[in-house]
Length: 107
Image (cartoon, rainbow, N blue to C red; front, top):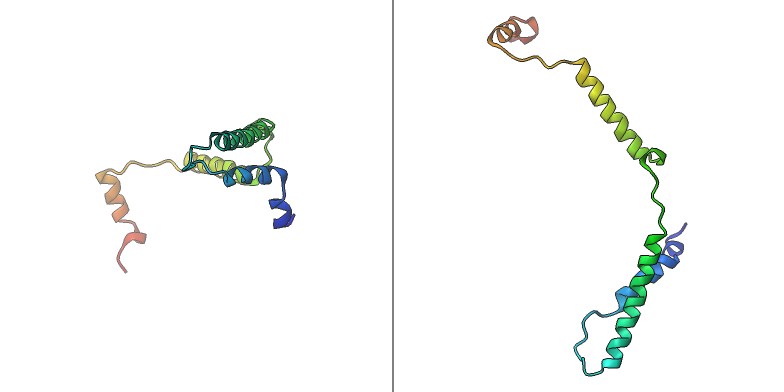
């Protein structure tokens, strides 16, 4: 789909027309013009609401979103890593044991 085809989509065209309507009119003496503008704006807003009501939202179990899948896998991996590697509480005696480790000796 090209950019022009995307911008020609009926939903985008309809929603972008609402932006052409000024929400503030400096001259309120012409009531019929103001009422016409309000009618047009209401028409566009109702159209946008009608389009939004037609959207289908799938349950999370049915979504085939690769990013969501990767995030869920990462969360599961993180949980599994936490279960495998128990966090040890440092005590003075455990620090002494670490200090005697050959890996921690100065070179």
